[in-house]
Amino acid sequence: MPNNNIELSTLSKQELLNLRICDLPLTLKNTWLADCIAQLYRELDAKGMQFKPSCYLADEWLAPDQEPVIGIPFFLAHPVLMNLEREIMLEVEGGTPAWCMKLLRHEAGHAINYAYKFYKTKQWRKIFGPFTKEYNDTYRFRPYSRNFVRHLEDYYAQYHPDEDFAETFAVWLTPGSSWEHAYKGWKVLHKLRYVESVMSKTKTRKPLVARGKKYWRCSSLKVTLKNYYKKKRDFGAEGFPDFHDNNLKKIFAEQHRNLFAPSAAELIVNQRKHIMRCIGAWTGEKKYTTAQLLDTIEKRCRALHLVVAKSESAAAAEVTAYLTALVMNYSYTGRFRRRT
Image (cartoon, rainbow, N blue to C red; front, top):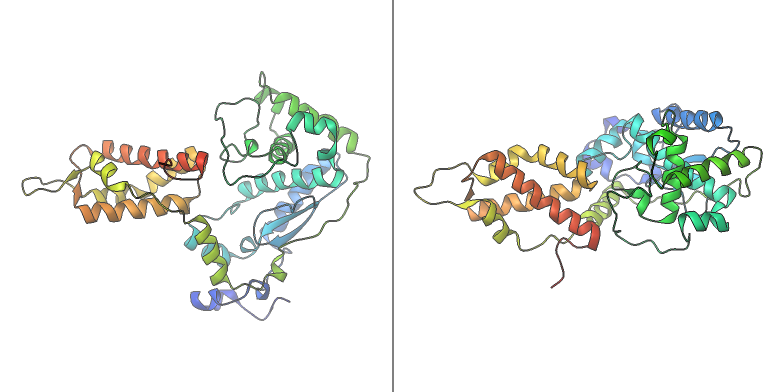
């Protein structure tokens, strides 16, 4: 049971990290998350949907496999924990009302799919593909494909048939999405029209599965925050490539006695936020992974005494392109470089 006597704002960072997640005094009631959930239910009401998936605090965003419930990351339920998440992972997934609503609509798509077992029908499988398809660590997406909606980052609809449905549902549910106009001429319209059709037939039906098991709920997680973040960081800490040196020497120059030029490492430090923002916007990769890469190449630039021998803007552009190539190769292959 949560320890309601704990005041998180009075704890030091070390004291906070030593707490078990199950001991955190957290609840959805009277939080900004409760307002977001209420907004989700209003949107479902506006579409005439009877079923409202139950929400709970979990270790991450999820709708457990074939369970019609929505798990919301526990750290979103308290500002102290949101700040800790941002400090350690560099971003807070779903940390704004708009971002939270996008994720809630997506997870609601999963929950409603499981509640009515649409995924078991021949029509669903014909439109979206086999529900039993294996989830891989990475997926090859086609950025310009018009057979998928664009809702969450990283072309997430292309990951798996279940994600394709959830993303399509989210677009259909979003107020003011005007999907008929926005996706006019796209193949994906048949998916959106399927959702429109099947949901109109579902309005008066009771769900086949009304309640679901709430896996990984925070009240059952006995891991400390320290170990939770260790595991989370280790999961994102990929084996970075060992060929930086030669590539960095193509972008920068080696320091010579007669060459007085700005430090390459300092350029990376000064341009760090801009580089991370650009890479995140175009690849959808987590900031933590990009930050690890930037830290690595900054250290190599210092060790090699590299300097900027061209315009700083040109050098920054090349660094951004180089890191984007690494991140995209990882997205497609699971590695930052090709196998040799």
